[in-house]
Amino acid sequence: MLKLFIRKTLFSFLFLAGLLSLYFWFRINLKDLFSQEHLLLTSRLFFILAVLAVFYFLQKSLAAFFDWYKESVVLKTKTELDDNFLPLFSRTASVILWSICLMIILSRFGININAILATLGVGSLAIALAAQDTIANLIAGFLIMIDRPFVVGDTIKLPTGDKAKVLEIGIRRSKFLGDDKSLIIVPNVDLSKNTIINYSHRDNNL
Image (cartoon, rainbow, N blue to C red; front, side):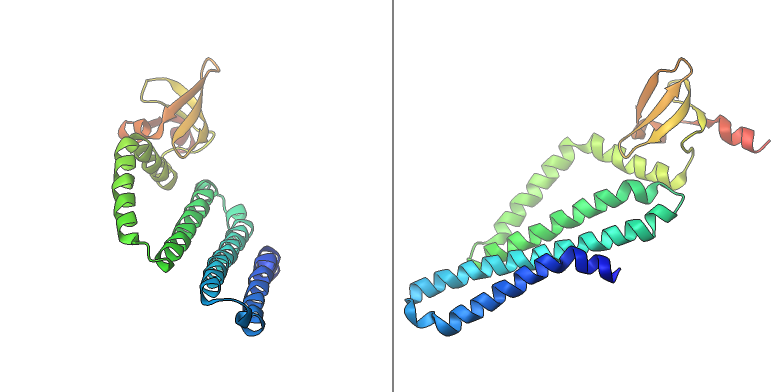
């Protein structure tokens, strides 16, 4: 874990340390050569770079953690739940992290972030309403992976009445192989709302 963390974060840490060293050297040795206006502009520039460097370091630290978790936990477990959702968690964490970074920079320059947050809230609500089918499929896929009514390799009866073999349980849609060797793709919400007959489960308990 320590070696992975150092390898992932070394460059970002050195960049942050070098930036801070340059800033303090500038303030000690060159501040008398610039006017107050130029000093203020320089301080703001260093502030932006420092915040970006800090959050870049934090992102690399998160990446190191997720890589460690994947190598130490995900690849050693039989369930595919964490395999499917780990990339989603990683991307979500990155979006949240850089959103916080942006809010800090904007607030430093006196920009009212409350209005921006309100706008983002309304926009997020509009997007959620427009993508409610996608969200429903994501939730259904998550519940299928937890409840495990069927797994890859099982033969089941789909809501359409077709008998098919489970090829893949996706986050939004799942794939099946029909009796005629055709590929059947079904939204997860349809699977969660209807009765599924698992023939493989019956066979295993005979």
